[in-house]
Image (cartoon, rainbow over all chains, first blue to last red; front, side, top):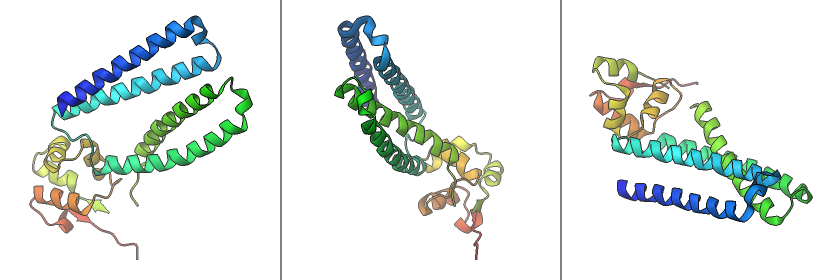
Length: 133
Length: 66
């Protein structure tokens, strides 16, 4: 299980590095302009969050602490519920202002990235405000 | 619902991490439980009570609103 996780982490980092190398070669300095810059920042932020959480999970596993339990499941479900509704409104706004986006790829890619960011944010909010009734 | 986890943990010289490992949950869950921010499942409540060799109702105090 530990080896599987480490292999998965290593493959993810390699995959992300390969994608970025390809984008840099394709776009060059144009990458740091307009929507591309926002998407670049979002990918980096989400990648760093994913990496940090993977490292923490790996550390916990080494110490014999379970990675998930009933509370983390509840937080995940609640955050997922909020993220779903917020994302629906976000997609509505994206389609209302679709002419502001340069192309369909930016619109869809950006929307998917923002949806992921909304889920992480919802998870943080739910975690901090979790209160049993 | 209130609980006596913190008090019983001190009695038995156990850390939050020790309790977490014994009942197979994350330390964060024990922190939330002690703060009264999370109501455990019946299974978790039973497991925690078993650690302290007490009945569930001796560890978790249910306060009815009615």
